[in-house]
Image (cartoon, rainbow, N blue to C red; front, side, top):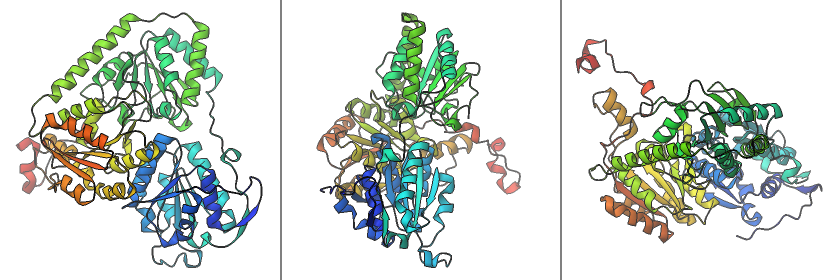
Length: 587
């Protein structure tokens, strides 16, 4: 598709239609594609996209559109854009927009709504979309007049970037038509991307704490990745000889091959990270909100330190001390703040020596954990131990591979096995925890980085919610590899029924088709694997083929990870006689 450059000069008002004003604003914002399903509500705008050089990617379900945009933004740094028909098309995006909101991902949802002459008549596909999305977006921007479309769209992008989250741009469907006089601005004229490093007094206090710390530990999070701040974090770590853990499901926030890297905290993370963090006297949390779920005890290790002094850096003041009491809060960009801290550390003590004992301690913790992971993976499974499948997968992943992970028993266990040495390589479902994320996210990631292999790790339950997008991958020629871990059940919940309900399974088992055969019927490559020693070669060949591929991996449904939330469940007590046999005291 050849992009036709806009001939509208900045600052010059010209006559155009509202549809043209919207599309020209998208062009100015660097938007290269929009995900969604076509609808009559925005067809006038849709007609302009090919000439404008904006690719329309038609998905099979609108939920997938926003998951694609979420991953695209995390990889590229450019806010994704999605659109759908008013009413059900837009409400189909609720789950994926909520996920992007929890993930702090900038996104613009173009939301056509009922036409102004019929609002309130409960007409065909009418819905108060603004009310529906108010709690799961940073802002709902309502176009109040056709002449305001460009201004309102600029506002949507400004807030999406400034507050790091999705924004709803709601426009009555009749407002795409007509005539207006306006100018198209460049993004620098209405939004600022550069962020500061934080208040000087906070930085000074933080540096003093770090200089005096005996066992400083760094937690590097999403903000480090988004700000391209990994090198700055690395400099602080090396100066202090401070081990670096990464926050929950952000395994790409620090190079795994660095001598000070200890791996991820949070559910199914690294015991090396948890044991190291437990000993900290000062914690430098960079670009992380320190989420409750991401800092809960795991493996029966209550690792998050209770007495350590916490220095928290976050771009959003709402996240400072939101979940854990802090000693110092720094409101600023993760990279800018880290660079300023490093500069001040060197000014105070330019010749600080490396702590070799600490390096050795980190190496020993990592070695012990790595061996434990291998030992757990090499336990025989029927047919394949899911951990063994994860281990074989990680052995063949190219250095530049991007991996997307879903939510579920196997997907979450992947947290322990996945290692990255660059940022923008791990795209996970995060704390909203919805299934069906990984595959559409993989499509979005591949669009952002067509030069990188992209692999999705998906359980069979989540695959049932996203396999329809194989048709999208085939149609749009997006060559991602889906590794479907097929254990015939919703195994995260099945584990709860094992531990708390005496293995009484209700709704847990799934009777799956042959996913490889289904993939072939949809035009993709489909491969079924039942032997662990064959898996690595199959995945490697799939990556090298550069074709949409689905690998149906048959894994043992009895080899399960611990429950997500032991604290959220209780042993069942039954008071009515007819249910007495279900009471745990009668087992």
